[in-house]
Length: 154
Image 1 (cartoon, rainbow, N blue to C red):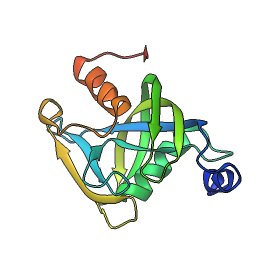
Image 2 (image 1 turned 180 degrees about the vertical axis):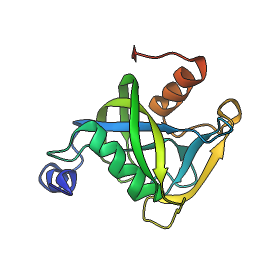
Image 3 (image 1 turned 60 degrees about the vertical axis):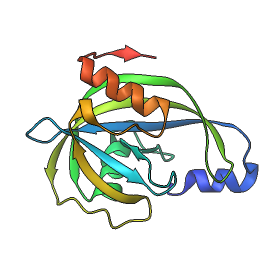
Image 4 (image 1 turned 60 degrees about the horizontal axis):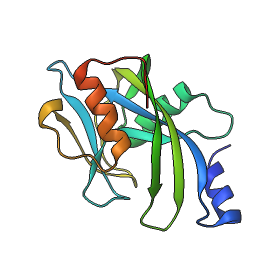
């Protein structure tokens, strides 16, 4: 069911919601991590992520979000961990408490393209020299990845 969250928000407004999403980490051959300069948090960077739509699995969501936000076709390689510690207030006033599996993904095809409503730019960064990410959940996911920690839950 596409646009499920938009339909829910139309009924409840900015009321805090418990939300499920996914976060993905894709590296290039040099070990750099793909980051997205987001349009909703103007100018700020984050990992590729998105909301699970009704009827989707988390892995399906991750594949869809990469296609929508980067034009890349990916497959989920493994579950790196689960982040459950973020309440986020969006610029439009929506409030959400997020539960997100974090996946390592592999590129199968496609060419990077940032021409969409959610993305200002896409760039690979050395993980240790990446810009500050837009929320704590993304910062923690990247920190766990850099530390080689797998199977974490926080």
